[in-house]
View (cartoon, rainbow, N blue to C red):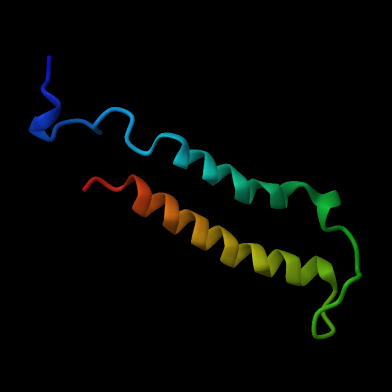
Length: 72
């Protein structure tokens, strides 16, 4: 059986529940959540600026998960 100190494998349960954060960006797939016009932001309907905001939110979540599960 391999010893955990030899650096082999993924280290068992490293990351744990942090990987569940990758499910949060999937909320944007639920269309009734943002299928409306109001409120507008700088003249853009909610439909457009909400999707654009999720790009940045997803980017931050992905970075947090990546650095949280990266081996030390």
